[in-house]
Image (tube, rainbow, N blue to C red; front, side, top):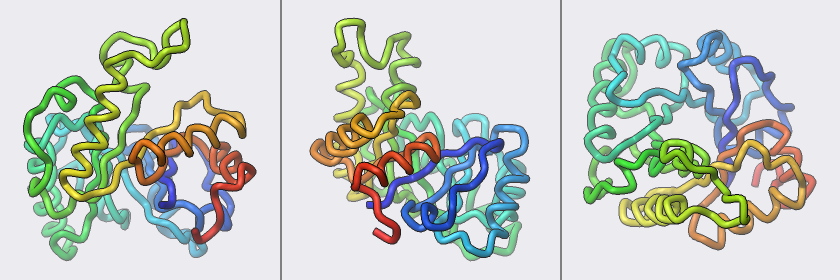
Length: 232
């Protein structure tokens, strides 16, 4: 499956041939300049991928924040710090209100969630199946979970902390249970062709459907590694 590409509001869009190789650009809507970038990307005539805004956490959201985002013609949102189905349901309701206010078709805005990035979601006993018909994918970020637990993503001995292993398995199992896609976020320091190839292969072999990339450079490295092709 085509990867997602996370970009900051200061980063330029990749070339059109690279955009066609990704599912969507994800712009952090909490950053300064995000609205300007979202509007500019939405108006780009040769953009051949989706455009998502990263929002949340759910406890900090309100309809007033979502309105301008939907008006910028995004295709979906990525909910940060998702703790479980209650966060999904709350976001779904707010999206319905924002869609109605913007005159958009109900349910038009897709919803993805960064899951198992906080301890509450790893420990949650509640399934995500049925939480919202919008929910189409989970995104696991090992670096975020490790930071939330006061750990390093990889120990000094080169091992992966047990908490991260559990979170990774949780994200995959919840996605399978809900019959949705699961993405794994590449670490920011994965800036070597051999490393990104290994990460890509490892993600797929462990049950993820694709990757979430942190920079346009990682797209180029995947393309150089021969695992990313335009239109794939």
